[in-house]
Image 1 (tube, rainbow, N blue to C red):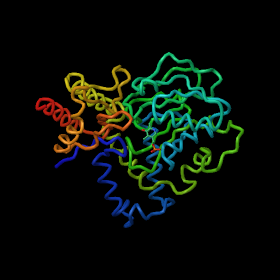
Image 2 (cartoon, rainbow, N blue to C red):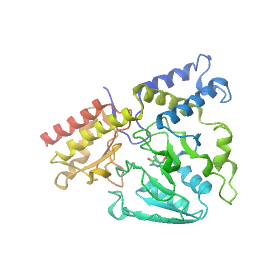
Image 3 (cartoon, helix red, strand yellow):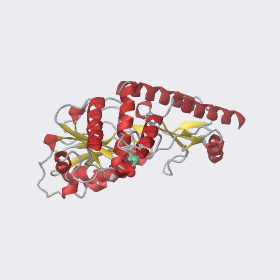
Image 4 (cartoon, rainbow, N blue to C red):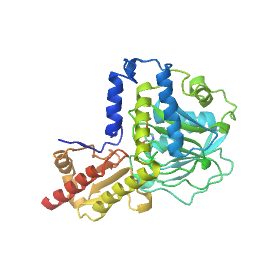
Length: 356
Ligand SMILES: *Cc1c(COP(=O)(O)O)cnc(C)c1O
Protein backbone atom coordinates (compact mmCIF):
# COMPACT_ATOMS: atom_id res chain seq x y z
CA UNK A 1 0.00 0.00 0.00
CA UNK A 2 1.21 3.50 -0.83
CA UNK A 3 2.32 5.35 2.31
CA UNK A 4 1.41 8.97 2.89
CA UNK A 5 4.28 10.35 4.94
CA UNK A 6 3.30 13.23 7.24
CA UNK A 7 6.29 13.00 9.59
CA UNK A 8 7.62 16.32 10.91
CA UNK A 9 11.31 15.54 10.44
CA UNK A 10 13.15 13.67 9.14
CA UNK A 11 10.36 13.77 6.65
CA UNK A 12 9.17 13.10 3.15
CA UNK A 13 11.62 13.57 0.26
CA UNK A 14 10.78 13.56 -3.43
CA UNK A 15 11.03 10.30 -5.39
CA UNK A 16 13.56 12.11 -7.56
CA UNK A 17 15.80 12.71 -4.54
CA UNK A 18 15.49 9.20 -3.16
CA UNK A 19 16.00 7.40 -6.49
CA UNK A 20 18.99 9.49 -7.53
CA UNK A 21 20.53 9.09 -4.08
CA UNK A 22 19.99 5.33 -4.26
CA UNK A 23 21.63 5.23 -7.71
CA UNK A 24 24.64 7.18 -6.43
CA UNK A 25 25.01 4.79 -3.50
CA UNK A 26 25.59 2.09 -6.14
CA UNK A 27 27.54 4.10 -8.71
CA UNK A 28 28.32 7.77 -8.21
CA UNK A 29 28.73 9.91 -11.34
CA UNK A 30 30.01 6.91 -13.34
CA UNK A 31 33.05 6.61 -11.11
CA UNK A 32 32.32 2.94 -10.44
CA UNK A 33 32.39 3.88 -6.76
CA UNK A 34 29.64 4.51 -4.26
CA UNK A 35 28.98 8.05 -3.05
CA UNK A 36 29.55 6.47 0.39
CA UNK A 37 33.19 5.75 -0.38
CA UNK A 38 34.52 8.62 -2.50
CA UNK A 39 36.86 11.34 -1.35
CA UNK A 40 35.21 14.66 -0.61
CA UNK A 41 38.24 16.12 -2.40
CA UNK A 42 37.49 14.26 -5.65
CA UNK A 43 36.60 16.43 -8.62
CA UNK A 44 33.23 14.66 -8.89
CA UNK A 45 32.23 15.62 -5.36
CA UNK A 46 33.61 19.14 -5.74
CA UNK A 47 31.20 19.50 -8.66
CA UNK A 48 28.32 18.38 -6.41
CA UNK A 49 28.98 20.97 -3.72
CA UNK A 50 29.60 23.70 -6.31
CA UNK A 51 26.32 22.96 -8.06
CA UNK A 52 24.41 22.76 -4.77
CA UNK A 53 25.82 26.15 -3.71
CA UNK A 54 24.90 27.72 -7.03
CA UNK A 55 21.36 26.30 -6.92
CA UNK A 56 20.72 27.52 -3.37
CA UNK A 57 21.81 31.00 -4.51
CA UNK A 58 19.70 30.86 -7.64
CA UNK A 59 16.52 29.44 -6.10
CA UNK A 60 16.56 31.79 -3.12
CA UNK A 61 17.76 34.75 -5.20
CA UNK A 62 20.61 35.45 -2.79
CA UNK A 63 22.43 38.71 -3.54
CA UNK A 64 26.20 39.16 -3.90
CA UNK A 65 28.15 39.22 -0.65
CA UNK A 66 26.63 36.14 0.99
CA UNK A 67 28.23 32.71 1.44
CA UNK A 68 26.34 29.42 1.41
CA UNK A 69 27.76 26.82 3.80
CA UNK A 70 27.01 23.11 4.26
CA UNK A 71 27.82 22.24 7.86
CA UNK A 72 27.32 19.36 10.27
CA UNK A 73 25.86 19.59 13.77
CA UNK A 74 22.22 20.26 12.91
CA UNK A 75 20.26 23.47 13.32
CA UNK A 76 20.84 23.16 17.05
CA UNK A 77 24.58 23.83 16.64
CA UNK A 78 23.64 27.12 14.96
CA UNK A 79 21.94 28.19 18.20
CA UNK A 80 25.47 28.71 19.57
CA UNK A 81 27.39 29.49 16.35
CA UNK A 82 25.13 32.47 15.59
CA UNK A 83 25.83 34.39 18.82
CA UNK A 84 29.44 33.14 18.94
CA UNK A 85 30.11 34.82 15.58
CA UNK A 86 27.59 37.66 15.43
CA UNK A 87 26.76 38.94 18.91
CA UNK A 88 29.07 41.68 20.12
CA UNK A 89 27.18 42.63 23.30
CA UNK A 90 23.47 42.24 22.84
CA UNK A 91 20.93 40.52 20.63
CA UNK A 92 17.13 40.47 20.40
CA UNK A 93 15.15 37.24 20.13
CA UNK A 94 11.50 36.42 19.49
CA UNK A 95 10.28 33.49 21.58
CA UNK A 96 7.82 31.56 19.42
CA UNK A 97 8.42 27.98 20.51
CA UNK A 98 10.73 25.25 21.73
CA UNK A 99 13.37 25.84 19.05
CA UNK A 100 13.33 29.60 19.60
CA UNK A 101 13.72 29.15 23.33
CA UNK A 102 16.60 26.71 22.79
CA UNK A 103 18.28 29.38 20.65
CA UNK A 104 17.70 31.96 23.41
CA UNK A 105 19.24 29.70 26.02
CA UNK A 106 22.46 29.35 24.01
CA UNK A 107 22.62 33.06 23.15
CA UNK A 108 22.64 33.93 26.85
CA UNK A 109 26.08 32.30 27.10
CA UNK A 110 27.48 35.08 24.90
CA UNK A 111 25.93 38.34 26.09
CA UNK A 112 22.76 40.21 26.83
CA UNK A 113 19.63 38.70 25.29
CA UNK A 114 16.51 40.82 24.96
CA UNK A 115 13.48 38.56 24.45
CA UNK A 116 11.25 41.18 22.84
CA UNK A 117 8.07 39.07 23.00
CA UNK A 118 6.90 35.54 23.77
CA UNK A 119 3.73 33.54 23.20
CA UNK A 120 4.77 30.89 25.73
CA UNK A 121 1.86 31.64 28.09
CA UNK A 122 -0.53 30.67 25.28
CA UNK A 123 1.41 27.47 24.52
CA UNK A 124 2.90 29.23 21.47
CA UNK A 125 -0.37 29.24 19.53
CA UNK A 126 0.31 32.63 17.93
CA UNK A 127 3.15 34.83 16.66
CA UNK A 128 3.55 37.94 18.81
CA UNK A 129 3.41 41.35 17.10
CA UNK A 130 3.75 44.93 18.32
CA UNK A 131 7.14 44.35 19.96
CA UNK A 132 10.04 46.79 19.88
CA UNK A 133 13.53 45.68 18.93
CA UNK A 134 16.22 47.76 20.65
CA UNK A 135 18.40 49.82 18.30
CA UNK A 136 21.58 48.63 19.95
CA UNK A 137 20.92 44.92 19.33
CA UNK A 138 23.45 43.33 16.96
CA UNK A 139 20.67 41.31 15.35
CA UNK A 140 17.07 40.16 15.79
CA UNK A 141 16.63 36.38 15.78
CA UNK A 142 13.38 34.83 14.57
CA UNK A 143 12.21 31.25 14.00
CA UNK A 144 10.16 31.58 10.83
CA UNK A 145 8.31 28.28 11.20
CA UNK A 146 7.54 26.71 14.55
CA UNK A 147 7.49 23.07 13.58
CA UNK A 148 6.02 21.82 16.86
CA UNK A 149 3.21 24.40 17.25
CA UNK A 150 2.25 24.99 13.60
CA UNK A 151 2.79 28.74 13.52
CA UNK A 152 4.74 30.56 10.85
CA UNK A 153 5.97 34.06 10.02
CA UNK A 154 5.49 34.14 6.28
CA UNK A 155 7.18 37.51 6.03
CA UNK A 156 10.52 39.15 6.76
CA UNK A 157 9.82 41.57 9.62
CA UNK A 158 10.73 45.25 9.29
CA UNK A 159 12.96 46.17 12.20
CA UNK A 160 15.87 48.57 12.64
CA UNK A 161 18.55 45.89 13.08
CA UNK A 162 19.62 43.01 10.80
CA UNK A 163 17.66 39.75 10.95
CA UNK A 164 18.91 36.25 11.71
CA UNK A 165 16.51 33.36 11.11
CA UNK A 166 16.12 29.69 11.85
CA UNK A 167 14.29 28.56 8.70
CA UNK A 168 14.79 24.83 9.30
CA UNK A 169 11.23 23.85 8.49
CA UNK A 170 10.11 26.38 5.89
CA UNK A 171 13.10 27.30 3.77
CA UNK A 172 12.29 26.95 0.02
CA UNK A 173 8.57 27.55 0.66
CA UNK A 174 8.48 31.30 0.00
CA UNK A 175 10.67 34.07 -1.42
CA UNK A 176 12.97 35.70 1.17
CA UNK A 177 14.23 39.29 1.15
CA UNK A 178 17.87 38.57 1.96
CA UNK A 179 18.77 42.24 2.17
CA UNK A 180 17.19 42.20 5.65
CA UNK A 181 19.24 39.23 6.89
CA UNK A 182 22.82 38.70 7.97
CA UNK A 183 22.30 34.97 8.52
CA UNK A 184 19.75 32.26 7.74
CA UNK A 185 20.16 28.63 8.73
CA UNK A 186 18.19 25.45 8.17
CA UNK A 187 18.70 21.81 9.10
CA UNK A 188 18.17 19.74 5.96
CA UNK A 189 15.81 17.10 7.29
CA UNK A 190 12.56 19.05 6.87
CA UNK A 191 12.56 20.39 3.33
CA UNK A 192 15.77 19.32 1.63
CA UNK A 193 17.71 16.15 2.40
CA UNK A 194 18.35 13.41 4.94
CA UNK A 195 19.55 14.56 8.36
CA UNK A 196 23.23 15.41 8.67
CA UNK A 197 23.72 18.70 6.86
CA UNK A 198 22.67 22.21 7.79
CA UNK A 199 22.60 25.05 5.29
CA UNK A 200 23.93 28.36 6.59
CA UNK A 201 23.69 31.50 4.49
CA UNK A 202 25.78 34.24 6.01
CA UNK A 203 26.58 37.78 4.94
CA UNK A 204 30.34 37.99 4.51
CA UNK A 205 30.77 41.49 5.92
CA UNK A 206 28.84 40.55 9.09
CA UNK A 207 31.79 38.35 10.10
CA UNK A 208 34.90 39.38 11.99
CA UNK A 209 33.36 41.98 14.30
CA UNK A 210 33.39 40.15 17.65
CA UNK A 211 36.30 40.35 20.10
CA UNK A 212 36.00 36.88 21.60
CA UNK A 213 38.20 34.09 20.26
CA UNK A 214 36.15 31.59 18.25
CA UNK A 215 37.18 27.92 18.05
CA UNK A 216 38.18 27.06 14.50
CA UNK A 217 35.29 24.69 13.74
CA UNK A 218 32.71 27.12 15.17
CA UNK A 219 34.00 30.08 13.20
CA UNK A 220 31.96 30.74 10.05
CA UNK A 221 35.03 32.35 8.47
CA UNK A 222 36.83 28.98 8.54
CA UNK A 223 34.09 27.41 6.44
CA UNK A 224 33.67 30.43 4.16
CA UNK A 225 37.41 30.37 3.41
CA UNK A 226 37.39 26.66 2.63
CA UNK A 227 34.06 26.41 0.78
CA UNK A 228 32.62 24.08 3.47
CA UNK A 229 35.63 21.76 2.95
CA UNK A 230 37.74 22.66 5.99
CA UNK A 231 36.99 19.17 7.23
CA UNK A 232 34.97 16.33 5.73
CA UNK A 233 31.47 17.65 5.02
CA UNK A 234 28.37 15.39 5.16
CA UNK A 235 28.88 13.99 1.67
CA UNK A 236 25.74 11.90 1.26
CA UNK A 237 23.23 14.49 2.60
CA UNK A 238 24.84 17.14 0.37
CA UNK A 239 24.45 14.85 -2.64
CA UNK A 240 20.77 14.35 -1.76
CA UNK A 241 20.33 18.10 -1.24
CA UNK A 242 21.61 18.68 -4.77
CA UNK A 243 18.96 16.27 -6.08
CA UNK A 244 16.19 18.10 -4.23
CA UNK A 245 17.45 21.49 -5.39
CA UNK A 246 17.57 20.24 -8.99
CA UNK A 247 14.04 18.94 -8.63
CA UNK A 248 12.87 22.28 -7.18
CA UNK A 249 14.34 24.09 -10.15
CA UNK A 250 12.67 21.67 -12.60
CA UNK A 251 9.31 22.27 -10.91
CA UNK A 252 9.65 25.99 -11.53
CA UNK A 253 11.43 27.37 -8.47
CA UNK A 254 10.26 28.99 -5.25
CA UNK A 255 7.14 30.72 -6.61
CA UNK A 256 5.79 27.41 -7.88
CA UNK A 257 6.72 25.60 -4.65
CA UNK A 258 4.92 28.31 -2.69
CA UNK A 259 1.85 28.01 -4.88
CA UNK A 260 1.71 24.25 -4.31
CA UNK A 261 2.36 24.58 -0.57
CA UNK A 262 -0.42 27.15 -0.18
CA UNK A 263 -2.88 24.98 -2.11
CA UNK A 264 -2.13 21.94 0.08
CA UNK A 265 -2.31 23.85 3.37
CA UNK A 266 -5.47 25.73 2.37
CA UNK A 267 -7.22 22.47 1.48
CA UNK A 268 -6.39 20.91 4.85
CA UNK A 269 -7.21 24.01 6.93
CA UNK A 270 -10.52 24.29 5.11
CA UNK A 271 -11.36 20.68 5.96
CA UNK A 272 -10.46 21.29 9.61
CA UNK A 273 -12.47 24.52 9.81
CA UNK A 274 -15.51 22.83 8.27
CA UNK A 275 -15.35 19.85 10.61
CA UNK A 276 -17.47 19.34 13.72
CA UNK A 277 -14.98 16.90 15.15
CA UNK A 278 -11.54 18.44 14.46
CA UNK A 279 -10.35 21.91 15.39
CA UNK A 280 -7.14 23.78 14.57
CA UNK A 281 -4.86 24.77 17.46
CA UNK A 282 -3.73 27.99 15.72
CA UNK A 283 -6.78 30.20 15.26
CA UNK A 284 -5.40 33.35 13.65
CA UNK A 285 -5.15 32.49 9.93
CA UNK A 286 -2.11 34.74 9.37
CA UNK A 287 -0.12 32.75 11.95
CA UNK A 288 -0.99 29.33 10.53
CA UNK A 289 1.92 27.36 9.18
CA UNK A 290 1.65 26.02 5.65
CA UNK A 291 4.31 23.41 6.52
CA UNK A 292 2.99 21.91 9.78
CA UNK A 293 -0.77 21.83 10.30
CA UNK A 294 -1.67 21.18 13.94
CA UNK A 295 -5.15 20.15 15.00
CA UNK A 296 -6.92 18.28 17.78
CA UNK A 297 -10.33 16.75 18.40
CA UNK A 298 -12.96 18.88 20.10
CA UNK A 299 -13.37 18.06 23.83
CA UNK A 300 -16.49 15.90 23.26
CA UNK A 301 -14.54 13.64 20.85
CA UNK A 302 -11.16 13.81 22.60
CA UNK A 303 -11.05 10.12 23.50
CA UNK A 304 -11.25 9.22 19.79
CA UNK A 305 -7.84 10.72 18.94
CA UNK A 306 -5.96 7.44 19.28
CA UNK A 307 -8.62 5.70 17.23
CA UNK A 308 -8.24 8.19 14.38
CA UNK A 309 -4.47 7.64 14.22
CA UNK A 310 -5.22 3.92 13.90
CA UNK A 311 -7.98 4.52 11.30
CA UNK A 312 -5.69 6.75 9.23
CA UNK A 313 -2.84 4.24 9.35
CA UNK A 314 -5.10 1.67 7.69
CA UNK A 315 -5.14 4.01 4.69
CA UNK A 316 -1.37 4.30 4.63
CA UNK A 317 -1.26 7.63 6.50
CA UNK A 318 1.78 7.77 8.79
CA UNK A 319 3.32 10.38 11.06
CA UNK A 320 0.25 12.44 11.99
CA UNK A 321 0.51 12.12 15.77
CA UNK A 322 1.05 15.60 17.25
CA UNK A 323 4.13 16.55 19.25
CA UNK A 324 3.67 15.65 22.92
CA UNK A 325 3.62 19.35 23.91
CA UNK A 326 0.56 20.03 21.73
CA UNK A 327 -1.14 16.61 21.49
CA UNK A 328 -3.68 15.71 18.82
CA UNK A 329 -2.37 15.68 15.29
CA UNK A 330 0.26 17.35 13.17
CA UNK A 331 0.28 16.91 9.41
CA UNK A 332 3.56 18.10 7.94
CA UNK A 333 3.11 19.20 4.34
CA UNK A 334 6.67 19.83 3.22
CA UNK A 335 7.49 20.57 -0.39
CA UNK A 336 7.77 16.90 -1.39
CA UNK A 337 4.26 16.10 -0.10
CA UNK A 338 1.88 15.58 -3.03
CA UNK A 339 -1.62 17.08 -2.98
CA UNK A 340 -2.92 13.54 -3.50
CA UNK A 341 -1.71 12.55 -0.01
CA UNK A 342 -3.36 15.61 1.52
CA UNK A 343 -6.62 14.58 -0.16
CA UNK A 344 -6.28 11.08 1.28
CA UNK A 345 -5.95 12.59 4.77
CA UNK A 346 -8.91 14.92 4.25
CA UNK A 347 -11.04 12.01 3.04
CA UNK A 348 -10.01 9.92 6.05
CA UNK A 349 -11.04 12.77 8.37
CA UNK A 350 -14.43 13.05 6.66
CA UNK A 351 -15.05 9.31 6.69
CA UNK A 352 -14.04 9.00 10.33
CA UNK A 353 -16.28 11.90 11.30
CA UNK A 354 -19.22 10.33 9.50
CA UNK A 355 -18.84 6.96 11.17
CA UNK A 356 -18.29 8.30 14.71
C1 LIG B 1 13.92 20.46 13.60
C2 LIG B 1 14.23 21.87 13.98
C3 LIG B 1 15.39 22.23 14.68
C4 LIG B 1 16.38 21.20 15.19
O1 LIG B 1 17.14 20.73 14.17
P1 LIG B 1 18.37 19.72 14.44
O2 LIG B 1 18.97 19.62 13.09
O3 LIG B 1 17.78 18.45 14.96
O4 LIG B 1 19.26 20.38 15.43
C5 LIG B 1 15.61 23.56 14.93
N1 LIG B 1 14.76 24.51 14.54
C6 LIG B 1 13.62 24.21 13.86
C7 LIG B 1 12.69 25.30 13.43
C8 LIG B 1 13.33 22.88 13.57
O5 LIG B 1 12.20 22.57 12.90
